[in-house]
Structures are given as C-alpha cells and as structure tokens.
Amino acid sequence: MKKIIGLATGFALVFLLAACGTTEPQYPTVTEATTVEEETLPDWVNTHENEFGLTVARLENEEESATYVFNYSIVMEARDGIAPEDFGDTLVITTDVPLRGFAVSLFGNDMLGEDLIFIPIDTFGEIDELAPGERFVIQNYRAHGTMPWSGVTFVDEDGVQRYFELWQTQSGLGEPYYLVESENRVSELPDDWQPWW
Image 1 (tube, one colour):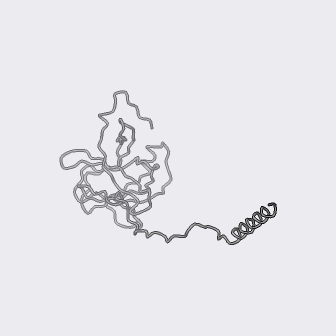
Image 2: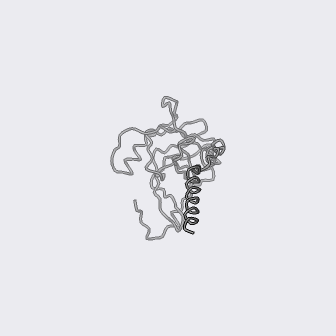
Image 3: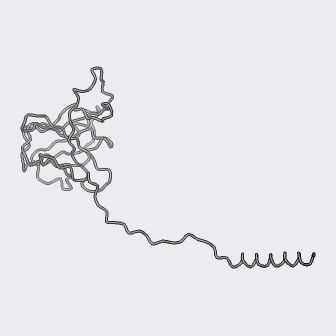
C-alpha cells in the first residue's frame, strides 16, 4: 500500500514539474493601434462670427499699415497702478460695418446667481468711428490670465452700447485671440454690491 501511494505521489510530481516547465508565460495580447481621425479645430476657435464682421488677429509684421494705434500699456497701468514695460502682442481689429465710438474697454467680472458676468469699468483710446477697411492696432497687449479683463466697445446703428470681451485661445490651435459679445448686466447687481478686484 505504501508503494502504491509512493508511486502515485511520484507520478503526480513528475506531471506537475513537466507542466510547469512547458507552460508559456501569458502576456497581454498586442492589438493594433486604433485609427485616429484627422484632428479638427474646436468649434469655438475662429468661429465667433458676429453681425458686425468684427475680427481680431495677431500681427506678425508690425510694419503693416494701421489706421489707429493704441498702446495697451495704458490699460495695464490703469488696472495695476504701475507703468509696465513695452512688450506683448500686437493685435489688429477690423470690421465690416461702421462702428461709432469705438474704444478699448477694461472689464471686471463677478457672479450673478449662477452666471459669470463681465462688468465694464472704463474705456481707453476712443475714436469717433472704426470704418470698414480701417485697422485699429493694439500694441503691447498682454492677457491678465485666463479670464478676459479687456475687450472693445462701440455704439451700434440702433444707438445701443455693445461690449466684446477679448479672449485668448488656450488650446494653441488657430488664431490665438477672439472676440465674444457680452451683455452689460450691471443694472441687475444688488444695491450693496461691491467690486472684489
């Protein structure tokens, strides 16, 4: 009986060792890379069309002709209280229709309920009218972080003051700057509202 048990144990060990020696290691199966569709620009890049044909672009060649030139350092000084050095991007703004009382606008921002609103603080570099074919150039433009603190304002043909924030593209795709219209909702702020900036 002991011999039978010994033989059975021996055969079991032999089969077990043989199995261990011949088992292939199991690695994850390598699959082919999935096909990636051609990258397209996000919908919000360079698609902020407006009824005025108002556009902004960065000038690579600062010697291009300009109808009006505004130094953005004035806005930086008004906001921060210090005179900054002259450096930054050069932007050009054009329009398809005449815009009366065109100016650079300084904005603040705050929450109104669940909405983020932009609050006009002051205007700079106002001209009587920006006409089609004219180029309003902003020198030494520098963003104040990811939120826009500036933009442009003008009076439309119905006598309504319009405001456009100057946003900077974060994706690095397409034109780095674009304009988005915002509604002036200052009249909706509480009577005891105070600016936080």
